[in-house]
Image (cartoon, rainbow, N blue to C red):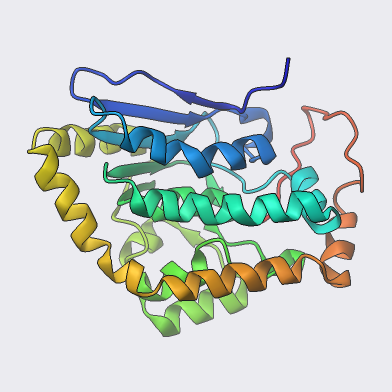
Length: 271
């Protein structure tokens, strides 16, 4: 039997709210190919379910997601087939959140990196713990920020702040991300999910079509800039075939990942 992705989906509650949780806490919820692929398709599934009104997504226990599992990211760098699939899945994650008519709310506790950020920050409302750490992470591994950041961050916080943060590879605390406009709001540690659910219940109380129309209308500006995303994603995947990226990844993960040791989280920038 093939392994299932570590993504749990709770049945809609009485308000029509679905809770999606990334469940690899021993790896800080790092995304393998399984989870990466799942997040590329899950939004369309919710879009077709009339009983679903709002989607809340979070990470289990200590983190939202520490990006792509390094074993997976190294496969992206070394295997043409894995790389092609990861490119299309990375595109599907961002496009899926954007095109899903149902509002998506994310709750960030702990770290959120790379591909994890593509899920968390593309959400229509992102609630972050004040001490949450948001890290793009791509430059450290010889890649450029193509999975959402070069597309979203300049629109959210302004071109100068976004360029500086991404070129310097600087992390953002949740409180700072809220001040810059990258997330909707920051709340005390341990309260992000409760606050996200509070927002979800409020949205679920409105007329569903009016809510969906509001989301589509507000996200029109992102669609206008879609070619920026397409270009940045292509450039990121070009970086993965460079020798410098492969050398950086080889220092922290074996070329053919051995059986995972749960005591040693292997996490990376995402794919």
